[in-house]
Length: 454
Image (cartoon, rainbow, N blue to C red; front, side):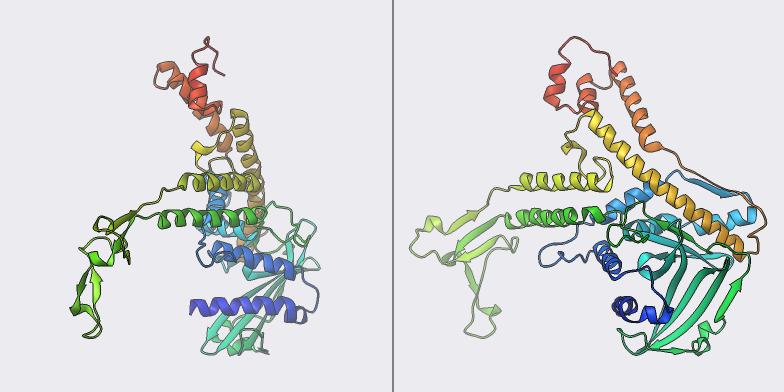
């Protein structure tokens, strides 16, 4: 059922944006075919179904690592609260699953956190809503949400539109029935689907001058279609991720193809008549060992000493590993991560200054994500307050983030200085770690006159 829904959902997205959505909305929309194609590409990559993941190439899930790292660091030490006790309880409950959903939002470019009544919220990623129009701040002020209910051979779709009109929030609902995965079908009454019978066709809320949900968008320039639609955090590294996945598969093949085998002449094999498909068929066998260890060959003309010949090629894995690590570092640079977030730190031959610059780069990217997230959560609180009749009641929302990316580095360095002073850490190891020197260089440098550790 799940695969069937996913297949149909892809068909609906293509059909809505290319053929029908303008007719349903009655006007132009901000979601372009180019952006939809990109969202589908990012979604496939996150699902391990990138276009290059076929035959022997499998995904290394680098995209997951990127999104998880940015989400973890961004909200790890977040302190957010509302001054009103009731609103704060509802808000804290709403963000319990923020981390895992923010990962999806970072991967697909944008995320909406939408209240469902008074005490529940729904996380909606870019592949499940259609922005119709954006305001001057780059936030959607007209947006369409789709709810899909497959039943038997039919599909039911509810199109829920939220928009700001003349300074008021208007919410409308329309329902459709379809027999095909590529057609919207015909419009029906909301009451034809029991679960939707209570939804109003249209209702306006006077005085609600902002959307009733929080909208998060990655701080990444949209060079796909120039619209305010969000762009995946790893979009700039798609080709590098492709190369890394292929390189990873090469490494796997190097290990698989290098497995030890023994080429065995047929004269050294035993034949078991009892395992044949008929009385005239005989199958060779060897003493029980790994099934892949022996390979039968016809070595006629060779002497008995060559009945067994070992095949054990030399592995070249280090070259493949070095290449993969290089791709990891290039990906880290492209998306704004620090060296060592994806790559193995021991392969990163960088000076202390370069490492610090990389951490600063990550800090700047995370800070930008946090600013966008703060705006999203502030709007979410307004939406929760609205549905609980407290929109104009007066409350304060506070959200603070700690800059542990930089402070942790300085704390770690200070601790290492103390370890060197106590003799718990050799000076050459300190130099290798913080000055980016090799072990040989560091040991050679500490033989010189004593220096002041900075």
